Image 1 (cartoon, rainbow, N blue to C red):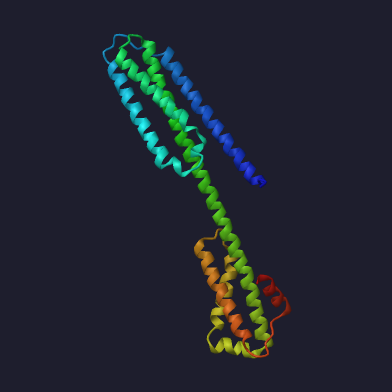
Image 2: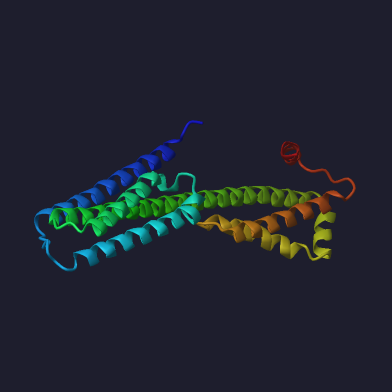
Amino acid sequence: MKESRAERYRSRRRNDSEVSRFWIMGLLFSLLVLAFEFLFEIPADATWLQEMEMALFSASFTLLAFYLLGLTFVFSRQQEAGKVNHHVIIYAWLGAILFHLFLLISNLANQHVYKAGIILFLGPLFLTVYHFITYLSALRAARQEQEQATAASYERAAYQLILEGTKVYGEINRLKTAYPEVEQMLRANEFYGKLERYALEMQQYLQTKQFTRKDVEVLEGHYYYLENLLLLAKQHPGIMESRAFAHRESHTR
């Protein structure tokens, strides 16, 4: 099925947004890597290095567990899961966990090794944050598209009901003019006031900028009321509906 121009525009804008987000986060990660490598010094004989590695190991393990829970209960609700390859993120967390475990066991005295441990923690963290942001952005875009489609559907249904109701009201007025017994029936059964009020309310809905489900249900009720009155009017002997209206009904059946 060929995409419309609006769909192509939305798809292109969504892709541009994802690319921009990726490059921004990649730039931030690169700046952090350069800062840790050239601006920060880690003493090789510091007593808190093992505690830092233990904290990074625990944090990596915990974040991986939360990420797997997110894949199971949140991301699985969408087929593309935010258009991010989650296997890469899982492998990155596993690599970081193994590296931190290696540093805890080996107890190396090299600041570059510990800087690498910090960078290996920040890398999967950035990928995880990017995945969550991408997923939430895709979810919000899908929700907006769904809301727009629903609003368009309500609007189309409302205008169709107003159009058909106006035609039915016009046919009832024609029958009232041509057949006095129809007007007598409407007034005797106290249908006349409600008929005029419903017809006026349906016309007033033309000024509505955004229709809701309740508006469509109200218009449906008004339309079916007018249809029932027309059906009652046509039950009188000798009454014939207009040719144009009969032609409309033959097409709607």
